[in-house]
Amino acid sequence: MLSKSQIKLITSLKQKKYRLQHGFFVVEGTKTIKELLQSKLTLQALYTTETFNIDAKDEILISKADLKRISFLTTPNKALAVFKIPKPKPINLNGMIVALDAIRDPGNLGTIIRLCDWFGIKDLLCSKETVDCFNPKVIQATMGSITRVNISYVDLAAFLSKAEPPVFGAFMEGETVYKKQLPNSGILVMGNEANGISKQVEATIDEKISIPRFGDLQATESLNVATATAILLSEFRRS
Amino acid sequence: MLSKSQIKLITSLKQKKYRLQHGFFVVEGTKTIKELLQSKLTLQALYTTETFNIDAKDEILISKADLKRISFLTTPNKALAVFKIPKPKPINLNGMIVALDAIRDPGNLGTIIRLCDWFGIKDLLCSKETVDCFNPKVIQATMGSITRVNISYVDLAAFLSKAEPPVFGAFMEGETVYKKQLPNSGILVMGNEANGISKQVEATIDEKISIPRFGDLQATESLNVATATAILLSEFRRS
Image (cartoon, rainbow over all chains, first blue to last red; front, side, top):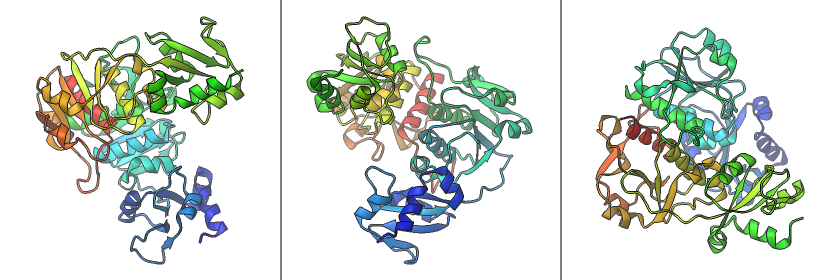
């Protein structure tokens, strides 16, 4: 049985305000939970309809009906876990870094975190306007990658203005990425879904790059920011 | 005012069965509707809270409350349009073609349609198990690209077994795409989100390709199929 206070705490974690206040976030789905249990994250509680065979103290067996009461999903999985939000580690300025300027869609952020993991990007910087990475929809989309990428929320324009060049930015009117000599390290900035990179951040960009369009030039509007990030990271890594 | 039969027809179009039966599909959002109005698609009816200044016969001004009754969205936009499902055109076998083997997620299919549009891919083949491209969530994700890509549902294994080589397939254990000489035309097959390319389709593949992983080899599981498609199409086009 779940207590009222447990239900209240868990459901409050849908909102960033309460995640910050309590220092916890929610993960759903057996597979992702198992992956997070193997990471350095600290489990606060595991609510599950089937035992995980872990330390009994942390595991609370509940009914499907109870899971439905606390789940954020329309069709709940078999388990929901509450983990402590980890402290971000210092940013490693020597590697390749991705920086996001006001990415709003949780699915896009989740996909970009998964891409960073795939391409061995250790640090992801997010402007303060970017969606919270502990948003349940972000966690769902990362497929466990959240444990392997160090995510820091920073004043992006201020950070980049002091960063070592080169700072690359994705712009519709940038230079074709296929023709550029790309370094092994540097910062790649991706902009907001609707408005691209903001004026303040644009002022800190050393090199504007773009992905050439092969379709109808009049009609096709833009690439989704997550797919554009996929192509640009592939370009940095292949060279 | 909306009649009961209008409401019944429109809300039934959420389901593939009724889309096939009636031959109609639904589009929401002023921007996407305007884009579709400029295409060769045939409008059946436009339900809107603000006039589009088009032929009055096709436009039905409704209240926000009525829009909420027919909308598939939690937060309805200003308009909902019903279009006729177009007949697929013959497949052009001379260009670059993308083929999908049982893609289930509407967001993934929508993103892949948008990518085809960007990279000038005129034909997209879908196995019969692939999610319907007139699913409202697919239409939403295509951002209007659905009008510029010819989508055909086929028996994929049968089609590919008769196709001219080379047929490329994305496999985890494939040859690194960065080291391959890629042609300007050919067929690129992408597999199901969980299971990849099926055995029957695999038997028709001439060349298995993969995107190298740069992150932790033990942990990072896979790339999302839409981001993998983005990277592979970029590789075909850049060469």
